[in-house]
Image 1 (tube, one colour):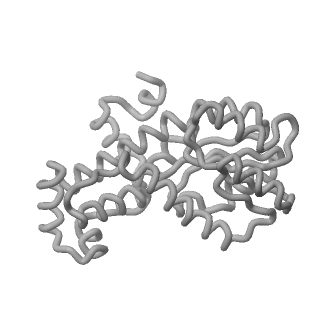
Image 2 (image 1 turned 180 degrees about the vertical axis):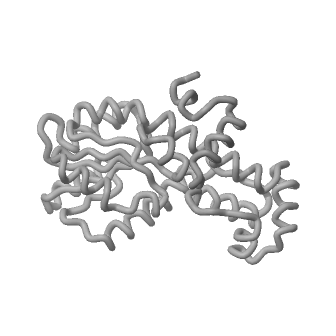
Length: 240
């Protein structure tokens, strides 16, 4: 999943954006948020989210001020402005700042659905070669891409075989031949690495992070995490 940071000066609107938009279902998670754009700037520098959603008119730094300052830090973020002002000049200014999109409030659910599809395509193109194994097997590449995009879902060798209409034994051979690992070990690794990122980059509870990583049994998640990193999730977050 990709990380998102939200900037909105009205606390109630910010809470509504966090709670009403299906982030997780669309392979995003909210890494942080703030009503103060100056504080948001400092947190964005630290968290380095993949996407920043920001209001335009705010006390202190405007949305455009925030984008300019982040660009000066050469952070590789995509920017989506959500504004009550529908003017060509504002949309044009965002384009000049290499922003991703300009949405006018109130934003329809269908607009968010379309936005998420385009964002995912852009981010996967940008980071795909870094985040996913690129093997000589197109079938395996499709499987690993699917697993990485859908970590919150329950997966097994059988469900993946059904999803891609491939024999389970053949999938096992693909992982062994091209990645020198098993299907189960690969799935555990990407889930553990994702959980570790969430522990370091967000303030979400360990139980929430377990679910975001595809584990709905909290105690089982903690046992697997401890076996993988030789410490508990809480200790890992604390730098132990």
